[in-house]
Length: 257
DNA sequence: ATGGTTGCAACGCAA
Image 1 (cartoon, protein in one colour):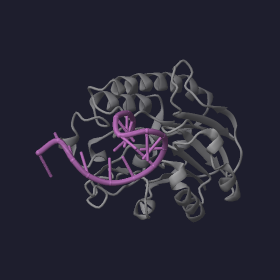
Image 2 (tube, chains in turn red, purple):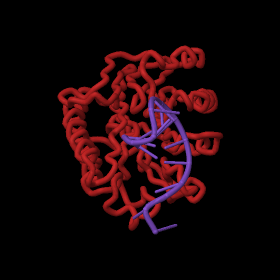
Image 3 (cartoon, chains in turn blue, yellow):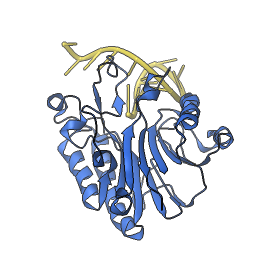
Image 4 (tube, rainbow, N blue to C red):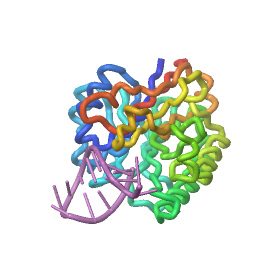
């Protein structure tokens, strides 16, 4: 079985012990990280190598930053969407064998009246164009990460209060559907899931305890891979650990052959 | 009722 996961760690410096614990417990083949909040010289590749993982990473000071940890080394690394001018480190692509992986930390958007919302929509437009060009090159393609989009009503704890809010606005949800339409499948929805399954809960107001969350972390697979997806789940364990990330890992398992 | 929490890095910004 091939186990592929995504996790917004909200600072790898703070969360490295959680990541090492989770790798040891769950033994994924590939783990995509977002919000590492580290420069490349500060990336803890020695500790992760010690744990048995290869690393690629694209970071910056203070904000953003993405990485991919893997049992085996990959090739053809990209750290940006071509034709999108963006100093923020939010993209990391790599190929393992015949599987192409694109790890994304899609902008949050802040609110519908923020300039950051326009930045998010423009970012999504360029991502879609890039995926449209890339997908035909690989029958096995995965895009995963923190999308900062809850695609359906069932993906927010209270659709009425979330209506028209950032992460759940029509334009963001339409952009998500456009990506699916290119030929991607939401691995989580390929399988039976518990109601009110979420991947992010605000640190405030006891949101996790009350399960007032949203599902914004996703693993999308091309049809060639989706048909081999045997399981996909949200792992809430690390949210219960001391000083957790506000996101939990999402895991997909694929039949090898 | 428009709060609250965390991480960074330096007391504001981003999420």
